[in-house]
Image (cartoon, rainbow, N blue to C red):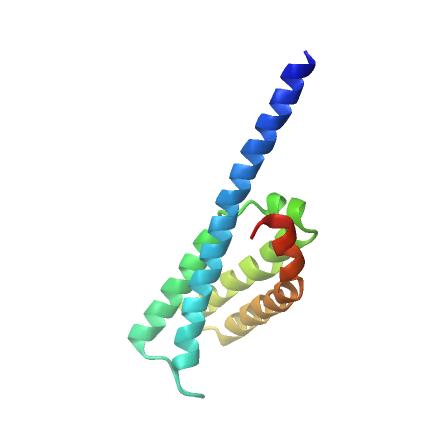
Amino acid sequence: MVTVVLFGTCSQKSEQSNQFKVSLKHFSNSIKYDKMATKIVNEGRPYTAISGDESEKLIYYYQQSLNEAKQVDINLLNDRYPEWGSRYKDQYIKGMELIIKGHKDVDPINSMNGQQLVGTWKIWFNNHITEIMKKSDY
């Protein structure tokens, strides 16, 4: 009886570890797409509109980032490091949604609010990345 319980626990831990690896891959992909979008923004000249083709690429990368982000198991992130998942959901994912909505609706307020949320998340993440990496094999 005890052996079965221990085996079940090991199996659950292994499954949870695999789920975390999958979530971490989606997390990393979301960041990769965000960086690709940021590169487009940074390559433009200050105070000028992004061209139509570049704008389409930008929205595509933001959407890909959001698609990947929504596949991340928020609870598994929180299990590895306090607030990691919650902040990712409430700041990064919500911010991406607002950025995309702002671009699609030509609504600079939504876009700016989204950028602010994502920026807040990036500051938090950069301030905690060393501890997160230690606890999550990231």
